[in-house]
Image: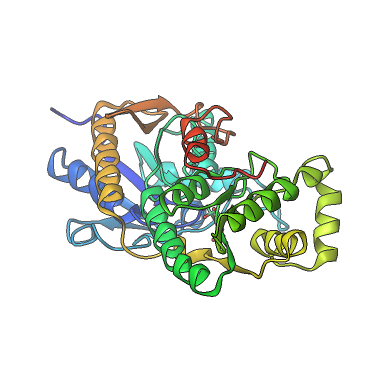
Length: 357
Ligand code: F6P
């Protein structure tokens, strides 16, 4: 089949995650081996397209990268539709470079922000294809994003390790995962790691309910507990406040993040010795899991097929066992939260985990 796309650019944007290189390899190998497309690698996300930091990619560039963490293209959190202090017209620069390099399509690998920008650029007349990556798994339109499985495994491993410390010291260990708005990572790793309490941003917590649960456990002889908390967790009182007010109160208490706030509240409520651990960027580092390698490769080769057909304005997505393409308007401007009736919430409660209420 002759490919509609002759030349495309590829970039990775937003926070890096395991599987980005596997996805780059998937797109480029299939685009080159099957369709002989010309490939231009764009450095550091949308910033590279604004600055014209573009280079040709050849098979040796995308060979041997399947298992490597990070991204060979570099990334940035550049948001072209946001004007900066110097009033740079970034969208104009992107469009100029898109035409200068004679791109038939721009392939963007990223999360909500990246795919939203992709959608807005497609409204500006550019051909765009998106691939969903993020450890947060919060992209609307796809069941999974690559990066999530690797991060979930890292978090679960950390919870396992902290379990033995909790047991030995008869302590409550509070473990913070990433996830500002969506609690997928905390919920899934929390269940996999046997968390006794899991707190996600979608369900504002009540410290009295958590205290009760921990005291009940202690009554049955379990003098230690594991509490998994997403970084965006908020209490029921905080949920009722304006964002500004919440920020002000938090800056007054001087605690660095959710795990420290929750640990302090638990200690006050129960008198139990409590420690906080923030997993931080460790969750995004290193080699991708086998599952993420498969998903990223699948997404990548599917994107090459869409390029060949000239089916632009889409994001590749997973639905059950299928890889499909959804319109870029589906993820644009949205965050996929854990729905209140999600089966994993019921599963957590069925094995005795408190969800903070
Ligand atoms: O990319 C998503 C994410 O991992 C969030 O879960 C987290 O809040 C954020 O990135 C951290 O961003 P940065 O690496 O810029 O500190």
